[in-house]
Length: 262
Ligand SMILES: NC(=O)c1ccc[n+]([C@@H]2O[C@H](COP(=O)([O-])OP(=O)(O)OC[C@H]3O[C@@H](n4cnc5c(N)ncnc54)[C@H](O)[C@@H]3O)[C@@H](O)[C@H]2O)c1
Image (cartoon, rainbow, N blue to C red):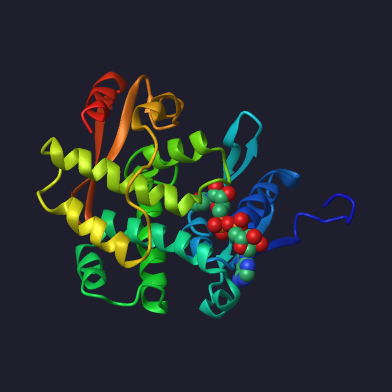
């Protein structure tokens, strides 16, 4: 950027998926102490999730997203047509985040999906963006409500980290993470009965996995490194029911005990 003499009045446009958006946003946030950038997301995941909300990050060898900033894009332009060339595996990844968004905040959305409504549509892409936008407007810096967007991510990230990044897709890991945490929370009376079955039905309808083939207990070490682990308290995101999530603080020890019984 310095080589081509970008100035503070220039802008960066990210045209690509979440990786491109995160790098563009990060560079825009630190170049000359911050210049404007626009997001033009071209993957489903980037359209429904990563292009909105202003989180930027890059990975270090020591871990994912370890260096980053909050820097809101000046604008986000979304056009569903670009998804025509997106490989099926990437579409499925985005679907997992869309199901997550419905599950945490919108009961009607989940019921419509369970009734068979087409998920990858302009209507639901817009709905996901609106849900995330409202959450971020209330809690830009992730101290409260924004954590709900991490539903499925505590176990999902552990599955990704254990497998080695890139071995299992983010969407698949999150899908399994959502299912496992809901199975556990329902078992311990922290979710309404039937929530797990409804969630699994939704995941199955969209060809997403819901069972973990490895040993769940081996995920523990990766969960203790999780950024949602504050002072040895995990901030678990649980579903009270489909369409309504809440934060449940729990000690790591208690969480491991619960995992052991799964
Ligand atoms: N900032 C946030 O709030 C946030 C939220 C969620 C995820 N993320 C980050 O997003 C990243 C994942 O993003 P992603 O799933 O978009 O992956 P990605 O950016 O790696 O894109 C996936 C693949 O699709 C290709 N591609 C992109 N658009 C295409 C199109 N229209 N047609 C054909 N191919 C296309 C890309 O070249 C790439 O190979 C992760 O690094 C994750 O950490 C950030």
